[in-house]
Each structure stands twice: as structure tokens, then as C-alpha cells.
Length: 343
Ligand code: DAH
Image (tube, rainbow, N blue to C red; front, side, top):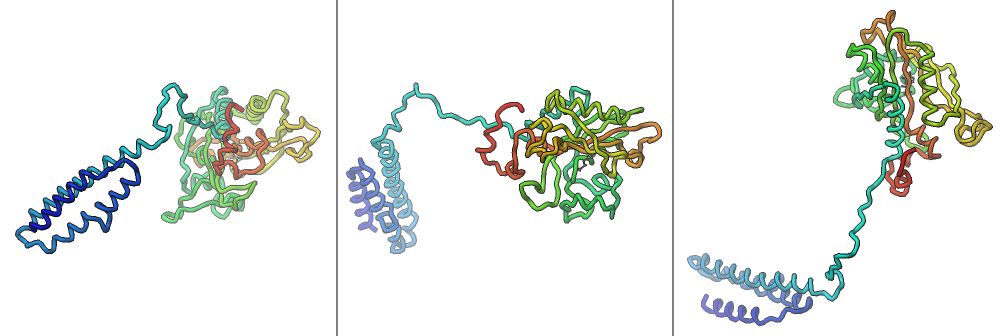
């Protein structure tokens, strides 16, 4: 024990004298005193030779020594790291700061905002609904009962905890939820994310975005629908754009139509975007089916209404000439930073 205390004193002196001005010296010091085969470790190894009644006292002495050795190392490490011959430390306060890129709006978000603002000017309010939905709101209430063949086109993801829950396939569930509130008239648009069980490719994805529209009041007619949508596309694509309505089928509207706009790229003669037809399909629409109104407790003899639904990705792709749906969700900054302003 006495012998070890003597050694400790000698090591202390050695530590005090150890010159630590270069990183190499600091490393040598670390290995010699603090390394796994270093002096501190070796001294702690002596503990087993110390009689039990002295262990506590000896432990304290050793600990002090260890802290002493470490303190010198820590101070020297910081000092030599800072004394590296580099210009990093020479702060020139007049230099401009680091540039923090501000990012930009996602193209889907830009187009969604434009769509919303056009309808808001027409008096439509924005309504929201759940993405995890029950079967009734997503299908049955919309006149798509179980085993209806039209369900095939909208296969989706089901929640295993409850077979009645699914990821909504369209924003039309918000129509139902708004109508159920029983407050009429209704004039809403519902932007949101929707899901389909699709294999991902340039033209299909397992999620995308839609904007739904719904107007219910007394005496609402197909003429109101046409005029509203005509105004909308003129605002979005320009005053020269023409529209045409083609008969179509949706279980929740009767009559139903598909609306096309004259190709805003070529103006009519035909190009790659409109597949040489001069027209591009924009949305589905129609007069709300009386069964849907009744399912939500609305008197279909008194009230009528129109509805429409469009895909935001589709409109964005047309407007910006984007040809692959996957680009929207890959988060590649080279793609995203191209969309900095308004459409
Ligand atoms: N829900 C339809 C779909 O996802 C789109 C749609 C068509 C919505 C016609 C409507 C409508 O409200 O009237 O394919």
C-alpha cells in the first residue's frame, strides 16, 4: 500500500511535467495514462491486493488520481484541437451567413390552393373528412351497396382490426358526412387524399388527391353545374378554353357526365397531351342521385343538387407537363425545386 502511494506521487509529478502541446503528445499521454493498458487502469488493478479495511480509502485516492489525469487530458485535447493551424477559427464577422434554403410549395399543394380559391370566390366552403372511413360512408351511402360491380374499380386497403374500416377511395365520403349534418343549403368543396389498391406505375399510385364539390338546395339544376364548372376551368386554364360534357355513369349521380376541356396545350388541332383528340378529360360530375339524398335524410322531392370530383395530380400533370405520377411522392428536390411560384 505504501509502495503504491509512492508510485502515485511519482506519476503525479510525471503528469504535471508531461508536455502536451501537439495532438501527437496528447495521444501519447492518453495511451500512457488513460488507455486500456495505461497506468490508471493498472493501478486500479492493484485494488485486489489491498486489504479489505483499506479498500475504501485506497479507492478514493485512486479516483482522485484518475480525475487528475483526465482533467489534464481534457484541457489539453480542447486546447490542441483549437490550435490546429486552420483558418476555421478565424472568424470574419463580415462574411455572409450560411444560406438556409427556404424550400418551395409542392406542386400538388399549389394546384390545390388554386382550385380552392376559385371555388371560394363562388361561395363554396372547404369541408374536411376522415381518410380512414367506414364502408357505409365510402360506398353504401353513395349508392354503391356491397357486391355492386362499380366497387371493383375502387379496390382499397382494409384495416385488419375492423373489417368495416377502409382507407377512403374518394373524397365523396365528405358529401355524405356533410349531408348527414342536416344543414341546408350545402355548398362545399372537399380537397383531400384518397387511396386505391393499385400497382404503382407512372399512371397509377396507391394514394393521390381529389377535390370534391357538392351543391344542394331547392331548384339546383344541371345548368347550374355546367355554368359553375365552365367558370372554374376558365379561371384555371384561361378564358379561351371550351368544355364538353359526355354522358357517363356514377352510382351516386343521375344523370352523370364526364367533363372535358379543349386542349389548352395545342388549342384544338391535337397533340401528345390530348392524344390527338383536341380534348382532355378533367372530372366526373352529375346530379346527386335521389337515393343518396334520402340515405342522408334529405327530402329528394324538395331538394336537388349537383356534385363533381377531380384528381389534383391529373390537373397538375396537365398543367406542368409532368408525365410520371411517382414524381409527386419521391421527394426528389431536383423535381420539387422547379415549382416556386403560382401556377
Ligand atoms: N368519386 C369519383 C371517383 O373517385 C369522382 C366523382 C365523380 C365524384 C362524379 C363526384 C361525382 O362527386 O359527381 O372516381
